[in-house]
Length: 104
Image (cartoon, rainbow, N blue to C red; front, side, top):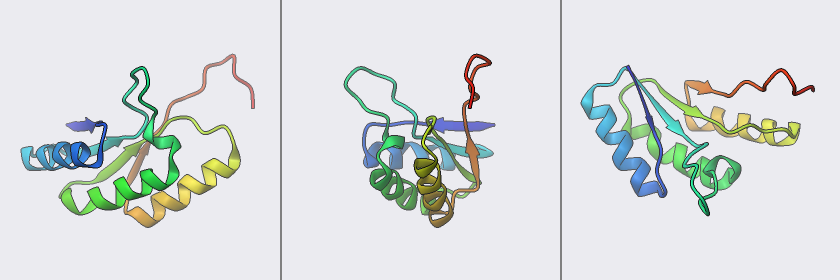
């Protein structure tokens, strides 16, 4: 069973990850492409904040630890996030699939 957690602050993410880890979920996914609410930007587009969150959360989680990311259309952004994921101990990534009308 996978717990996908989202929050508005590092403290909120920490509480959610700790709670999900303690509850015994099989995998913990930190959702950086949420929250999807008006006037609340997706944290996954703030690379510095994303790294702070992932680095702080990894030690709280006993299970495999992953991240759900928003779409990155610029290869520079993809490379930047890939480096963050390697440094922060993320073990799996959840991504969206572009629809058939989208062409690269």
